[in-house]
Length: 251
Image (cartoon, rainbow, N blue to C red; front, side, top):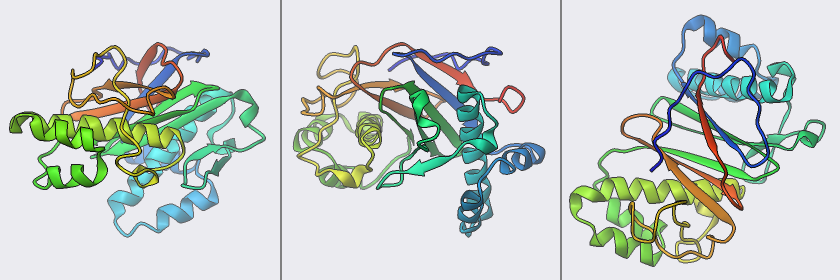
């Protein structure tokens, strides 16, 4: 698993072809920051936020979408409110045709108050974030969601190693599926096994099993914070990864 320093970004962030940029942000922000981010949202995003019954979820959605708009606007050199999203068949956001010529690709994930965005140029990308907690029914979930080989490998691990391996495997699979424009429900467990992590041999670092997805996607695992696991999947080879900590002033 990569050890990445989540540094404050420079004044000018340049994304080059072959690079991956990751951004980390807290979904709880000061009230004035939340209000500033909320002003960047589109009408449909405001309606979507209002649909959350829980105020915490409503505010988290606004912060996450506002951060995404701020970052996309930064890469494109436009105001966040001018960013226009379209959505794929399974809800994956992408830039509208009027903005897509820049070739910017992105994906976002959130878990337990933490938000991650991944960016690449002319390369499909997906990211998943998981907060590692005990899951009593872990083996039953894995039997349904993992490939047969992945489930067998999980069962063979000592009990104390299973939670980490479970979430590593889950995040790798989900990142690939999100990069391809669908969620975990988009593939059966035996038809889709997650490719191994870049730079790690088979059998190392959790559940590394052979996969027919291996030729299409490259995977990297990162640790954005204690007890969190994230996987980023890129189509083709996965180049250098830079990680930034989002700040309201810098954004």
